[in-house]
Image (tube, rainbow, N blue to C red; front, side, top):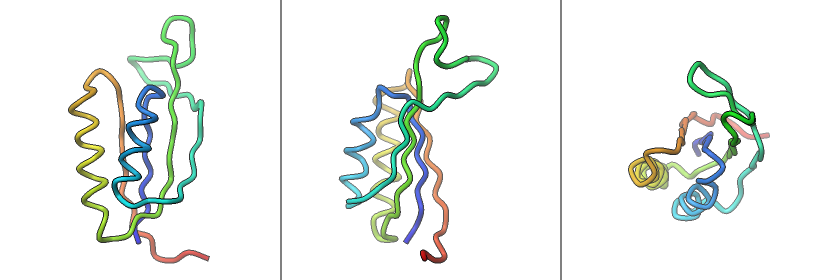
Length: 94
């Protein structure tokens, strides 16, 4: 198993959910309405409204490439919106 942490603009919520489905992920944890801030953007303000969603999912090793390609496809299809994914080895669950 591998742990994927995905963060995306709120407008990409459905696309990321579909990507998780395509990778055979039937359970994940999701955080809505997260805020982010960096030099170019200030989120959830009147100047730059918007928010992020984050997903944490355990993905079977055999399905990791499917999810990776699905996230890459989202980035290509929606270049104005942001999505990131981190793949983290999962040593053990308790």
